[in-house]
Each structure stands twice: as structure tokens, then as C-alpha cells.
Length: 149
Image (cartoon, rainbow, N blue to C red; front, side, top):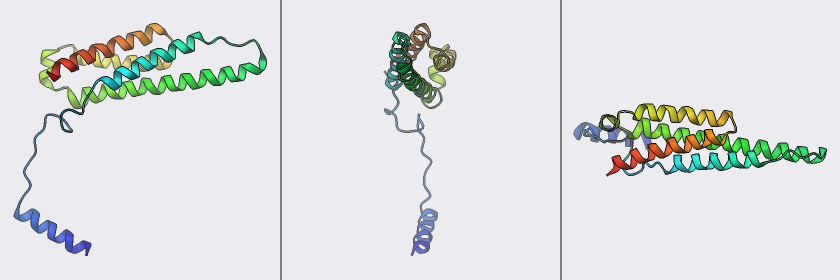
């Protein structure tokens, strides 16, 4: 049965060849957004704040709970830094086109540095580094929004 269907489909393909489709994006327009990267960068900032506010306990029993909390928050912070990087790179590789780069000549450098900053906030616990990431993502979001008009 499957063989017959496959044969029938080949005959239909020969009789009516599919046409080449052209698109601006890899997937239909309207699905790209900068909100996910913005949210991830904000989450990294908030988690960094939480980590910096934690105080190591003096009590030996409480140290294990403290270490567990630090580990969990740091792991989630790193996860959101990676999400931020992935979302930025999706815009860079799938959405932004040559005409955007002509209008915004620093865009490649901005995105490259923002992706590097995602790695930096994974390696350290620094509000300055997290704020820098938020600022970089905000700059990308502004350019993205301008290209949507």
C-alpha cells in the first residue's frame, strides 16, 4: 500500500513540478522577536542580584543548604544566559539581512559582543556584567524593532 502511494506521488510530481518558494526569513515573517532575549537578560540580572545578596551561614548545618541554593541559582543564571545567546544568534543568523546591515553597520559587532557577554555573565557573578548584557540586548531590540516598521 505504501509503495503504491509513493509511486502515485512520484507520478504527480513528474506531471506537476513544484515551484521554487522565496522568503525573506527561514520561516514565515512575524515569528521573530527580541522579547525572549530581553527577558533572559533581565532574568540573569535578577539572579545575579540574588546571588550577591546571599550570605554564607556560620552554622555548619546551614552551609549545605546555602551551597545548594548558590548552585541552583548559578545554574539557572547560566541557563538563561545561554537562552539569551541562542535568541540573539537566531536573530543574527535567521532574521537580520544584508539590508539591515547596510542601515545599521555596527550590527554584526553589536551582536557578536552581546553573544560574548552572555558567556561572560556565565563565568562571573557581577551586576556590572549583567547590566552590560541587558544594555546590549536592549540595543539589539531597538534595531530589531526599527527593522520591523
